[in-house]
Length: 258
Image (cartoon, rainbow, N blue to C red; front, side):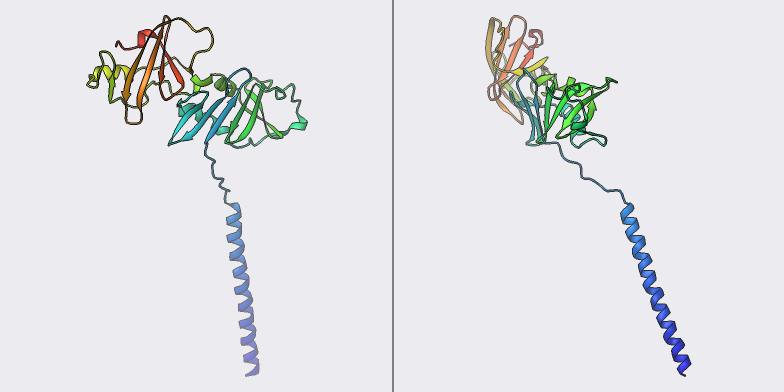
């Protein structure tokens, strides 16, 4: 009886050890699987972009009221496709170098060609490397590379980032001269299709040409309403919305007749 009881105790003891070992193996497997899972880094949202260039007015872009807007040096609806190009600069590149290991003067980072501040983080933009395909940028104390075209993009100024459509949303009414609140669909469509060649800060400051004529137009759309003033010069016209400070530069031939 004693021998049988001893065997039973040993069997229970061994089974207990096996059970504990099994639990340990299961825990190890679960931990290993968890460790091997890729770490998902939440992608940061692009919210603000500021651009500084020597000799030019600073440019500020901000995502607000569910759309991208140019807020400086003048105000206008922005082109989101152009701004999306900055998303690749949100996080540091995988390969980078400590600034102390780089000839910053040769890389053009002591006197940067531009400074792009993304979500509050400043990036100095320098010269291209020997391949000509990449451009040196400095983020804090690290130097990395960005596509060469990033400088070409910022050198486009306000015209590169503003929505060139004078009326981004469908016009519902206009009134001026021969156009009235009951303007025909054709008349509204002509103004709706008006696209600027440039979008610049207003008023003009350098080499201002002689004004040929100036007239005002009241307009209304689902998202904005107010008055715009058309300043017509011999070579072009500047369309300026009264509550904004950007001028949409268009050819005189593109302007609908009033």
